[in-house]
Image (tube, rainbow, N blue to C red; front, side, top):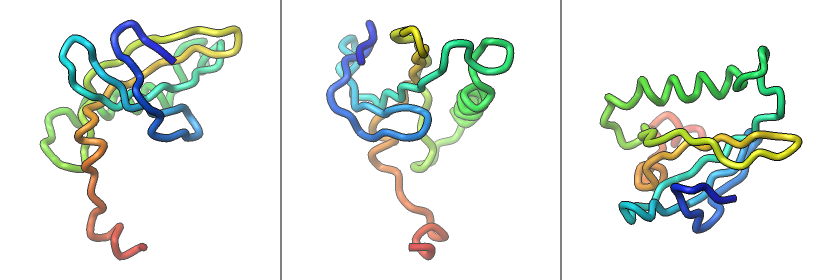
Length: 111
């Protein structure tokens, strides 16, 4: 996986909707978390992005005002490769905010 703006360094994890990579921004030298989301050709209803993807971006945009260690900061949204079966979209988040997420007190009590 490659984009023109970010250089993937390592895979962090894979989930139901896509893959998260540790990537480097060659312009700034900063490391970021690059979330590549699989969008089947045809996308959601009406041919665009699935509503879950639109909601995630909208929520992350609204959370930009918060300075909290458990809230990731959305830095960029970009289009990546396109195949016959899917279009990939990526969300770029500050890697430091992803790496330093801390469990909340109620989450600790569940484990």
